[in-house]
Image 1: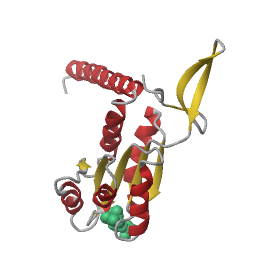
Image 2: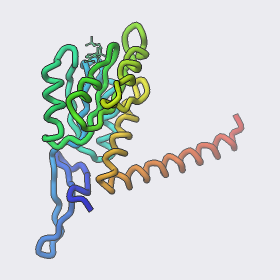
Image 3: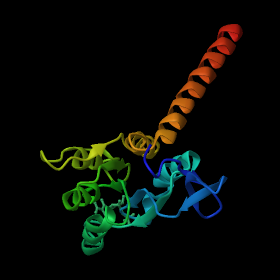
Image 4: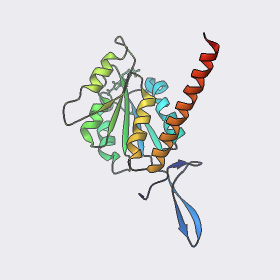
Length: 194
Ligand code: C2R
């Protein structure tokens, strides 16, 4: 089992493993974020905070930053170049209009980058979708649907679950809860015959 195998959020710190020392079980805590959530503008926050909510629910430490390939190009490059060294394992980048943030991050790192095209401007997100998804071979951006911040976070969890079995378990639990709840809803609708 990998050393950082248990990712849970505590009060301001994250429990990453249990160790036995002198017969006593002790928690090992970690503050380092595993996921970086970036957005091109504060105006993207109402969508991007949905990714943060999912990660919080899953107990995965994350950080949130505003960065922009257009308006903050140096910061964007610096962030991407240093993310792996800092312990970040997945990047989520949301941007609207001529969305180059995810692609610019991907150009400076080989960490997985998940792009969230944000619905904004005259083209309602179609522009952001195309510019995020159409990356040249060798520099991929895993692109979710327009405003798909939740799915970006779930995809990040799935990527992390390869290394952290507890995340895999949480994802499986979530799927079975969703299944059960839909079956219940279906029974209720069948009874009601709308
Ligand atoms: P403002 O609301 O700040 O004017 O931004 C942002 O993500 C936002 O959706 C309007 C839109 O511009 C986007 N933006 C990008 C990038 N930086 C900002 N697409 C980028 O680097 O790709």
